[in-house]
Amino acid sequence: MAEILQLTAGGFIGLMNPGSLLLILIGVCVGILGGAIPGISPSMAVALLLPMTYSMTPTQGIVMLMGIYIGANYGGSITAVAINTPGTPSAAVTSFDGYPLAKSGRGGEAMGISLWSSVFGGLIGAVVLMFCAVPLASIALKFWPSEYFALCVLGLTTVATLGGSNWQKALVAVLFGLLINMVGIDPVLGVKRFTFGVTALYDGVAMVPVLIGLFALGEVFSNLENYKSSDKKFERLTYKFPKIGYYWKLKFSIIRAGFVGCLIGVFPGAGGTIASFLAYDVEKRCSSHPEEFGKGAPEGVAAAEASNSGSVGGAMVPLLALGIPGSSTAAVLIGALMIHNLSPGPSLFTDQPDLVYAVFASMFIANVFMAAVGTFGSRLWVRVSDIPKTILYPLIFTFSILGSYSVKKSMADVVACLIFGVIGWLMKRYQYPVSPVVLGVVLGRLMELNFSQALMVSGITSFVTRPLTVILFLIAAAAVIWPIISEKRAQKKRAQADGTEAGK
Image (cartoon, rainbow, N blue to C red; front, side, top):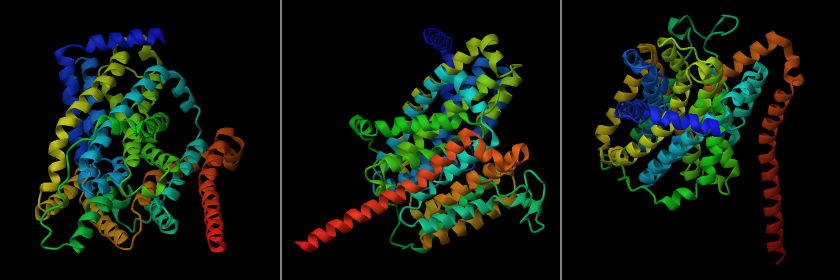
């Protein structure tokens, strides 16, 4: 441990120069801006600035890209809170409680929670990366397809809490999300499914247009349906951040979610979106007032953002230790290393220790910069509520269309965004929760691919003979059964209490 601290201190010293610090700051600012724009994911933001690193030293190039990665993961929460338009897929979970808080006049509170939860979640991820890179990566490498499938099943159990008391509609919504993933060419057999002869559907339905349509356009269409000409503006949002003591009350929520994000981020392909859903579910189950989640619970915002940022450190673990990207953004970072003739993996720790520990140090520095930029910038971002609805709605519609088109430069994605906008509006109208659809979309392809691979490797027996798979299945079963038992016990106590009152 002493050696790791000493080497990391050397990484800090190596970055303590105006050039490196400025590059990290630029990366954070660009990342926040990119994350806040719907359609520009963290991986896209990093990829867009990747060519700029050609003329830089390897250390300067990588730390700037790390700043973008960290900033973009937080940036998605800005529009999620202010206008219910998640800038990134993982920010969809932030909008569950962040937007209701903003609508109730507590926009500054929601912005403050999302910012500081992101900062502390990112710091937790940095610490985990620094001390546990090699051990955690070796654990992740032992995961078979059956374990990944069981992990996805565990993720699906969160639908029980996302739907609240209306679990039937939540189940329909998550099944619809899984069905969306059936469109396109089978990832294993190569068979066309539900394409109806449309070439644009061969690659399936892209996630970003689905998210933008369901959340942004769905909200716009729903508000337009109930629009009154007298409603010229949204309710003015406060931009005053809570005091430090307020965040202290959320410390356990942030710590729990930060470690959940790190753990999920370690597993290649899982990413911040799954981490956010799982952390949100864990926090709701641990809460003494779960009925407030989805209506403006501060713990919900804290869990979503802390886990999302914590997953950054987790995703870097297999990249640096094994050369395996833990997320799509980490895959772009591998390309950045290769541009400079560097091979990620165990040899990187021996051949380029200065670079590795500079990356560790840059994560701490980037989170500090993000706290500063987020604090001073929040006063501007929350002012979106001052824009008249007659201007804001067309702007949201325009950015939604542009964001959908920018993913693959395809008009098919624009059409998909519009279709899912109508679906999102209908779901809101008939009180179907939208979040389970996102959960189904996120997990569907990963579930199908790993289920098929598990069957090809060792048949159906791998799901019952591998101990870790069985443990994950048991945890998933307990996550579903325990709330049912708790609810029955609560009903029994209420019945007994009513009987006692009647006897009196």
